[in-house]
Image (cartoon, rainbow, N blue to C red; front, side):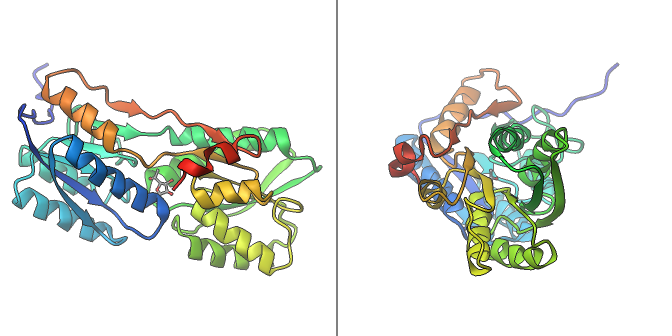
Length: 306
Ligand code: GYE
């Protein structure tokens, strides 16, 4: 049939590029490290970088992309805060002839597709991250009954959706475990602490906390300690990212594991963009391989952490 498939716009080969990086928020060390990685890469990759900060608002992030388009960027790197609200930004960039690379989060694949509406998604396998946390819990939990509280990331974001399904599917195959509550903490430390305080009152028998990122895990540890619990002893705390505070919590015995989710996308963005400009085939998903940090290796990695 003759159905015309959309295609991402090409990228001209040139000495310098005007590059847009639309950050979603800057309220945690992961986001700050990612933005810094783009700034650090700008010089070595010959970018004139326009970086914005949507301060946690998907609507502002769409407006930020609009303004970058108006400023004539050559290429857009976009971490979409949520899967659906950022689709208009992807479509507008395409209509303006600007190739887009999604970094660290994705959009709803039923509506916007890699290789059609944007070039590629650069990022981790979030389902696998959740599954790896579950497998660590299954191997290391010593009690008879694991009562789990789950702190979810930003509602409607791809890592929250996928870290939940990856973990839940795997952990529930073992009938020692039960998830008694699963609530959003918006990937934020303070909200993680507040939600944990509330959930502790409803479920005082919790002995496992799975947080979708390290910031919420640290917030949960604060709530547990305030309530007189001993994280790492009577409550197992597990999460994802690999921040400095999480590695320290592992070293201190308060946290069990964090599966890596790296924020250092600048160099990868440079490399993939240059290949695309050279006409090379870019896979729809440029997958980042993640390490795992536990008491065995946390001290070896804390100096490079953010
Ligand atoms: O894990 C979290 C951040 O999208 C992979 O977003 C990223 C996640 C990361 O706020 O800490």
